[in-house]
Length: 310
Ligand code: NDP
Ligand code: 8X3
Image (cartoon, rainbow, N blue to C red; front, side, top):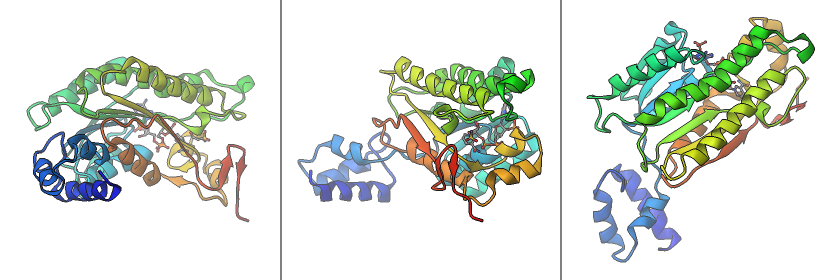
């Protein structure tokens, strides 16, 4: 198959809105244009369609999670959204529906508590069953809930901050994944997207617990990829650098002056940048795994080297 033919098949697939996993029209098209072209060649160049796929997003009440709800919604996905702030979840679900989500449901979730995670996943399972041509299977799990608390040195660190960070960013990912994995299909391109951070790759002063937590997330992702080898379930760590969301408002506990200073004169990532990447990673062909992605604003050459306009 030539490159030109490959491109053509891809265009046909997009136009028809079908792919080998779910639809037959492609076979007819393939016969018409390339009697000898192998079916698998088409499969390899076609992304997975997200329409009507169930996508579970933790931490969907703001930032990356809410933007991901809109972005997957725009692809026609069905959404299961969780976080602690119900009013913000309701807003995120409404925006996702406006963007095109086939369904957008939300439910309270605190990933730092096992009982809450289990209740949430039981609710998600009930929502999916009976409502879906996909047979009630969870196609994409986005472990996004988390964040930082404080920027204290180890010497001045607070137990509450450390515990909150490790609970949400590390144990939350483990709990959610353990509970949701039985709902995920094998060999259809199901995907777990864990939100890590530049902080999981490099340390900075005051970041000890957060850097440890995100390094923990990265290692959990790598372990999962080994454990799930052979199941067809894909596992990725998406690791952003400086991004303007509510992250810094939470870290600095509402101290606006510190929040503004962090972003002063620089051009950070925005939530939509990461949401687009999540959609792209999840829509790769089913045999493709994007292991790890580090995404930084151009102004952030390294964790300590951020360009600031005067
Ligand atoms: P936001 O503060 O805007 O979003 C954090 C989300 O996580 C909120 O929806 C919040 O919801 C939710 N959350 C926090 N704790 C819990 C919990 N215990 N249970 C359920 N939900 C929880 O920040 P971001 O969008 O930036 O953060 C999203 C992820 O991205 C985090 O894991 C963060 O560490 C990571 N990250 C952020 C970067 C940045 O610079 N912004 C860079 C790299 C990574 P609620 O409070 O309603 O429960
Ligand atoms: C957030 C990025 O650099 O503030 O995860 O830790 S950083």
